[in-house]
Image (cartoon, rainbow, N blue to C red; front, side, top):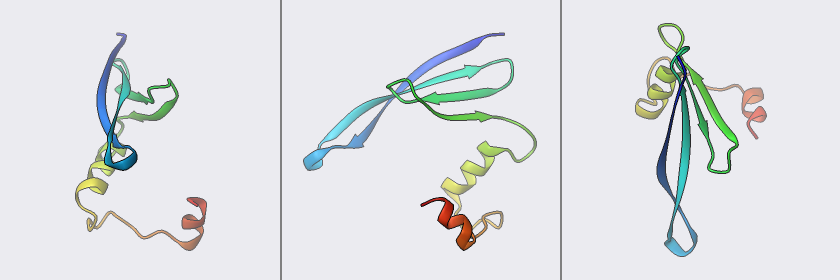
Length: 84
């Protein structure tokens, strides 16, 4: 069924309180419900596909809106070390 392509502008903090504008490029695959996000330099940032009842998109929504949700779990020391 093909792909859809879009881009959206966003802002980051620059030097001395200035604002820098950037582009996030998005490719949506209509066949398999997958969305891929790209940095403005073309490198892939994130790929998300919708699967099951509580997929990654739902988990991301919870992490952004309800840090105290019962599905949120503490990391072990070993898991924290992997992120450093």
